[in-house]
Image (cartoon, rainbow, N blue to C red; front, top):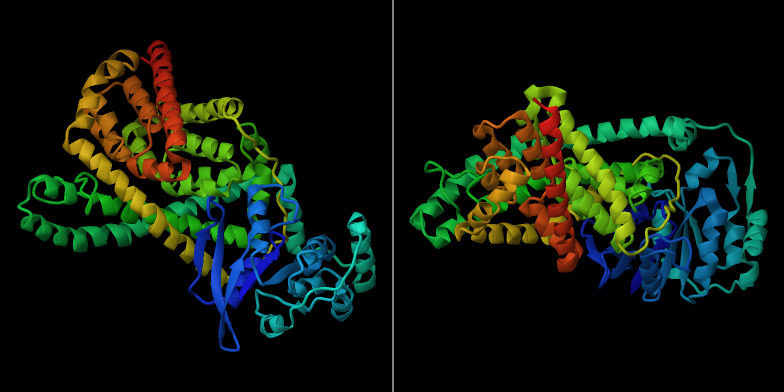
Length: 572
């Protein structure tokens, strides 16, 4: 038997799903799309039942790709469990009445039933069940209230005999509400006051800035902490000795040695510079990227389950819409400040190809990752605002200008933001842990192989001298257009492998402030690191990746050339 769990967004559906299923949950993409859904198993009378968490929908008349997939999935199940927000019964019954037309056995979970008492709502559950002829079970998934009864009553799922005139649907719903629901006056709670503050521009925008700063700080703290205290020590103290022994077996040189282990630096393995498949190839996705992925997904899960994420999207929507995106695009941009790889992966929350292309391209061009930021501070920090201010200010201006241009140039649609604003809730810890674990498993399974492939290709290009050759033939461009010394060309080309390493290679060149600023901006813009490039290939496909790459290179050269010209006249 296949049971489909459906409902409006933000009704606690994922928490109900986590209550019903065990720890072995599978996150999958619907065939031919990047729309993901969760699948798990539950047991009823000793029989294993498949439970699928369908993407949230408001109506069976789809308005976006996710709703199209959800409607398609609803045709494939045996039983439907609809999770309803009991504090917003009228809106949720609109979907219930539409689902009745599917002629499938149904059960309704009246979730958030505990909050009805806090909001002054009284629902006659028995009368509601009689009218719509579907088993209705009050639940509070956060505490587990009613979940056992919900499981027990799945066997009572039945086809509804409720008959209605579709043209009079809302009149029918209003009639039902008048018979089963009563509302009494109550005072606003603190969470309701906070909810109002969060969506009013005067108070919501400062709160958004504060949350973004706290989120960024927390992601950085967790990510850097894991790298410095867990992953780097493991690779240096445990993995490096194993690889050195393997290196001895391979004779410390030769094609396969360089491919698997990379170049030894003074007889040791440097995970930032060796570029072997088993050294740098594993360290980049697991030692440098995975900690930030874990940190971001943990923070994101709390923002999702607390109810703040939709408010963040609404507050950021105006500026994002100018670039052909909508408010939720702030999530990939925020994550990209920690690491571009999970930032690109997060573009999956956007609905259309146009939005994903614009977001991924802007992210790769003008959102420097934490490692690159750290190196830029080391390179230009002593110049203060004259150095760092120009670099980051230029990147911000570039982000806006290219976004405005891509909105006009790239074909496709950028839908308006339609998000439900739920009440603030305390996140369900077990659900957060399961959600983070599912996403980490997906990253390790789906993204890491592409990162390894990217490192392998870069390794081969470096081994056969292709990257060095490109550096030589492009040197005139760097010298005449960008005003940089020819030695900088090699460093910038190496940035394809590791941008932070490339910045380090600029330090010994004794460049002027103007040259350092131009080199830093071009390095940030012209091409993503190999790990990001590999994930871009997976998310965008070959054709869109080539288009994005062309935009990156052209914008970097144009910006660098203009910056070189302007700074030659203004900086001494």
